[in-house]
Length: 256
Image 1 (cartoon, one colour):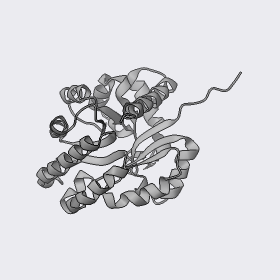
Image 2: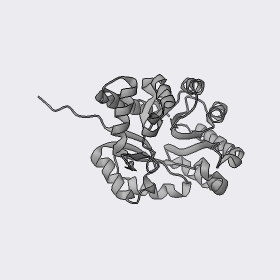
Image 3: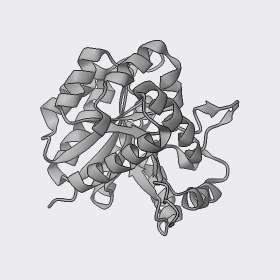
Image 4: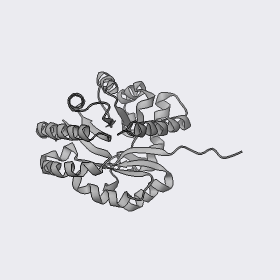
């Protein structure tokens, strides 16, 4: 009897360039068969990230301008716009209304609105979006500046309300789930209600930990196990679902 091939893993939000062993981590993703979205925090980082991943089957690089850096990096928006024609993936982008970054929120909104308009104009982009304490504002801007048939959004580390989740679902959003999200009863309850076909997995490494060490893309196995428990399915079935969801997300963008 032929061996059953395990589905590849998915880490749809990882800061690969913030690991000391950047190039080795890309090779690790290849070896472990982890489809990894390497998000960047500034557009200046994008070209070097792409150079290191250019021959990778499993790692793709996203063009980012992190909302937490907007106050000091807003001038890089011009470079971001210049590079967008070369990028299929966009991230990390979005809004952060947490206490440390609230003062720049209006500036963040201006930058994010520009990002959304440019993605809509070019079409065919997939975005990984940050929405800390700002889900309503993120969705308001999405509704105002994105046509749903032009691009796709994945809400990274979503911590909004049930009502905000329903609104995001109606807008066609996906949700990337990490281990830290499943540590909270409230967030586990929320994740249990999300449509199965809109779920992806992530680590958000190196900003999360697994068993006391910094998470790496292969650690999405633990996310799959926890997510399977929340959804009352077997881990193998959940891994297959996540891989299928990634394929569907990519196929949805395979348009002129």
